[in-house]
Image (cartoon, rainbow, N blue to C red):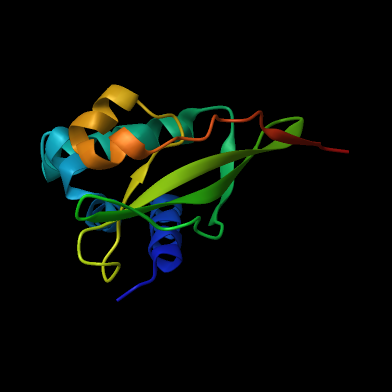
Length: 149
C-alpha cells in the first residue's frame, strides 16, 4: 500500500518514462472511463507524449511535493498534492507548479489520481461529483523562470 505522496511520485516517474500502463494504473478509474476506457486513454497519453517530445521544450524533471490536508466528501477522501514540472527551453528553465488530486475510496489505503493543474471543472463534476462540490482548486500561477547564462 503506497502513501498518497508515494503514489504521486510513482505517477511522476511513469510520466517521465512514458510508462503508460503505470499512468493508467494510477489514474482515478472514473477518469479512465470518461476518456473512453484504457485503450482510448492510452492512445491519448501516447499522442500527448509525442507532442511534448516534438515541441520546443524538454521536460527535465517532474516532482511531487507534500500532500495537503486530507478531506472527505461522501465516502471518498481526497487531498491535493503540489507538483513541479521543470522544462528546458533555448534561453531558460521554466518550473510550473501544478496539482494532482488523490482520491481514496477505502479510507486512505489505496489512492488514485487526477491531474487538476488545468482543470475542467465541468468534467471534474462528472468524474467525482461529491468532491467537485466541496473542492476549491488552486489557481495556476506563473512559471518560475531561471535564465541560462
